[in-house]
Image 1 (cartoon, rainbow, N blue to C red):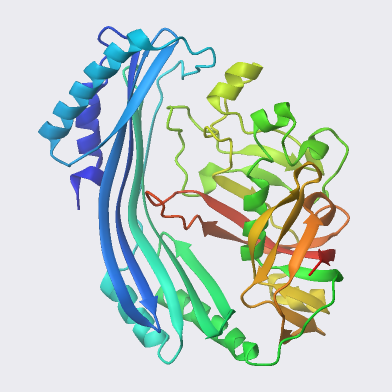
Image 2: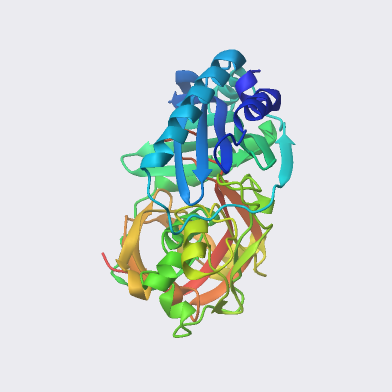
Length: 444
């Protein structure tokens, strides 16, 4: 256990640094983690790393002038305090050189919150043993990341927020040959060996089907069942520009037609930003308190937008917990009514799409997306997996696919953590059920 991921160290720093001496406000934000990383190939450990890091962002404000900088913390309280105080002095001096910011918006009241989920994570040795025992004889390629991730915020108004979540994310592939593999993701806050083994067995069963001859499909429109993982890719792409206030007001939102009433989604599609249900902190890096839910689409219509502080100031609307990019961090698609155990039966004949990749917009204004199928995608006959499919490119509008094209949504959701580890582990996630659609357009 390190002081960098425990609250007393942060509180002591905040008490020393967050003092408004000659300025209107001083704030301190923390991004920290103590993570184990394990890389596997052929069911054997190839790389093991432990990363302990903490970055503090110090901000000062006078009037409408604002500046900030970030420092890496050491865990030595005296040294960290000394360095932050010296940095605060430099930032206050820099305010003299900075023009007013017309879009600066900060919390007007001091709020406090505390979340400390200790979780039930495996030791690195337990993960290594689980892979060796459960994946014996399989070409298992995977990457495990786990440990506490911390976000914290304090300011001279008296705000104090602490968020520490112990979580893990394990992604692996069972490889057949070339591009033929079955990908699985397992993540959460409580590790279960039986759950890991069950997911591995399910993947191994699909791996056997990949040994059959592949089926090539001609371009056309097909009935398709998207897994939650495939829905994750579609919704993540939608989040690039679909929900932000700035994108809506400047006309670059991929959901502009929905917002203007020129298109409708299926009445069963209910999309929301729901940090209260995931790993995301209940506060932003600027100290704003996030609502438990921001409803983005319901009953076929666009509802609210994600309003970052600067956009909120510019357009005269309240900020609602969005990050600076106004992208979702806890996007949730509500479940439907299709029984989870009968999804293939309900599909009948068509495509079972496990994964998508290389997604992008082919026509942003029409919310048209393009991308490729990936890993274990199958042709289904009579409700049974029949043959693996050749890789195909799709090009279709999300607004068409999830309006008239939507047959139904699965009755069980899966929360998929953001597996990005660039610079640090993330706390974002997407929650989605499976989706059954008609007329999914394959082009190549």
